[in-house]
Amino acid sequence: MSIRIMGTGSCLPENVVTNDFLSTIMDTSDEWISSRTGIRERRLVKEETTASMSAEAAKRALTDAGIQAEDIDLIIVGTLSGDYVTPSTACEVQAAIGAVNAVAFDINAACSGFMYGVSMAYAYMKCGMYKNALVIGAETLSKVMDWNDRSTCVLFGDGAGAAVLALSEDEKSLGIIELEQGADGSKGMVLAGRDRMNNNPLVTNPKEPGYVQMDGQEVYKFAVTTVPESINRVLDKAQLKVEDIKYFLLHQANIRIIQSVSKRLKVPMESFPISLDHCGNVSAASVPILLDEVNKKGMLQKGDKIVMSGFGGGLTWGTCVLEW
Ligand code: ACO
Image (cartoon, rainbow, N blue to C red; front, side, top):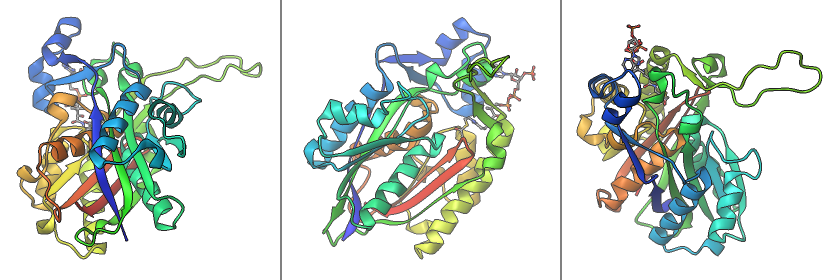
């Protein structure tokens, strides 16, 4: 029995926001943003919500997998920007798609949320508790950005991506081969966003809720060292080499991070598909949106091995190698 990704789906908001548009509302330029990050445009919500995009991505993944919503027994949503504190986005998805037999909950591992979700679903399935899981990464980051801070708000976008994982008897695919997750909470404040303020009667000077703040250079240093190390560890455990891997699907934070990982692994950039040019950084949704794009373009054949790696706030990271 293997644990395979049987189908993928994604959903982006309708509204495209280009760098040129941003330069009409703040002191920035297409040249500054695209040369430093590779981002040319992103999608931002008007009517869509984290749950509505998640549900649409989930429906598309179920159709791709040929699995009915009633057959899903686990829904995990990686997000830091759900619509409510409760109910969770996963419970909203469960109701919207009619996955009446599913356990549903959210996890917050920031940009690694989808990868953490894949690991959790894998562990549940490996120990025999569940057979079919929906793992979703979804964000409405535009609501947690400070739109007066040009150094952060230009980097991020909104969207959702989903994958259906299932136990499979297909002997032609190993499915998920190896994975790991990690965290370094001691560096958490290099990428931080305060959410709610405590205003109970004991608190005399409640702090205002804040927006995402980032030390970009520290995040860069973390990413370019941790991601290749994590990929190498996972490949070692799987007894595979970088040459065995068709594509490396990395969290889409910044083209310069991906170029640096490509150099450190000595793998050409052609093996690193990119979506950040048209999506921006969509945190937990980055990897599953990219996976869906690669899948829907027909770039994956059965037997291809791919690596997925997410990294970001926490600080956290998660990497997985699988056979398609
Ligand atoms: N438009 C124009 N100018 C800008 C903008 C903008 N949008 N933002 C900042 N600037 C200015 C700054 O004010 C500063 O001006 P000054 O020199 O006059 O003070 C100058 O540009 C340089 O600012 P820095 O913040 O030092 O910019 P830096 O060159 O470090 O680039 C960046 C910022 C692209 C984010 C970089 O730090 C980086 O590549 N970081 C990697 C991490 C990353 O991409 N994080 C994103 C999300 S985190 C994640 O998903 C894990």
